[in-house]
Length: 459
Image 1 (tube, one colour):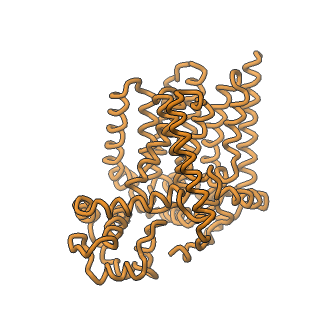
Image 2: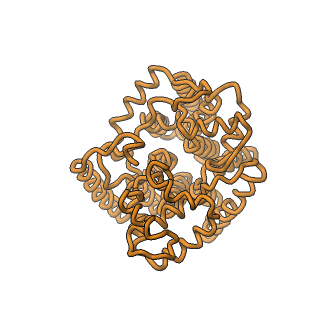
Image 3: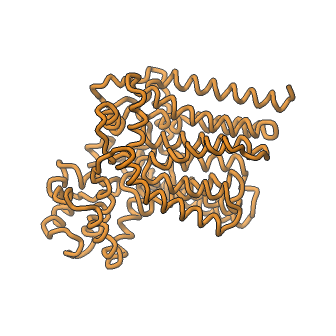
């Protein structure tokens, strides 16, 4: 056995050990409110599209085993991806290989990956695909057909398991498969349009999910956000009384859209929209944006600031990973004491810059500019940036878990590419922007009061 093979074997063994320990410590995984709903669908065979049904369909194959099989799958993708990348570079860059594995051990990042959620499923699938491709690409080898096929299946699952995942998948595929700018743009546009067009058919016809009305939430959120910021405009679809009540109850929250749907807040007032076809709401939203562009920009930027966690208060909610499972009647249990200690250890990280998605977005933009989209690192930067850019238009909640893939992708890109050794002008500009954001974020957390730490409090 050569020295290179010996180093790779050690990395593979280390990744397998970390995978096994992760499963042992965190089994059966943390089930959240969304998880329980998806498990209910898997048990009853009655599916809807509030969450992409492919996860519930996959879960239905493992009934009787609780949440553990889903935890195993998303941790397998996590450690397969990290192990494949680390093993591919260990003979040339041993420290970088260890850094890749260390990414998987950052407490809040691993803490979210062990929550049984579509976000962790997407991250596991994407990381598994990148690890497979990277195993050959990073050793300057051609990826075999079966390798592309396996990675392709993971990418398809990732694209279907989250509604906005295609904005991460399409740039990743384009930058890995095309060398010219025009080709990359064509692939991104083609894959995005195809996925958005075919997803309803796949979800409703192939996977048998009933429409839930989830498509209304984005349009209703933005229409309401415009309505409370401008003089009364009947074209927005609300009555004067509805607008007045939304203002009085502060139903439009930058943190999330939930206040508009909860009966205890504004749900009773606005539940008439439950029967309005989503297309009609978007038909109102498009001209509303044209008539009130500043109000729309204020609405979206307020939310983007919240979800990117820049000018926010300390301990901004839904940043720390869960410490317990949602109560349920399905005996979906709790991880043990060691897992709880790990999740406790993750809490102090919440206010650190590594948990601010906006920081990683800037790093991804700088890295992409330095790499010009080339190599695996360039593809990772592009994927992270594509996903984060989608939140400018498509996002109604501020949970950190939505950004997990972008954070991991950017961190790996930085390790692989060392972009700070690239074009000095790009590096200086990136560092300047980072410095401004870091100061702003720290000032906000030092001066703003701690917000409510419960869902009800944030409502």
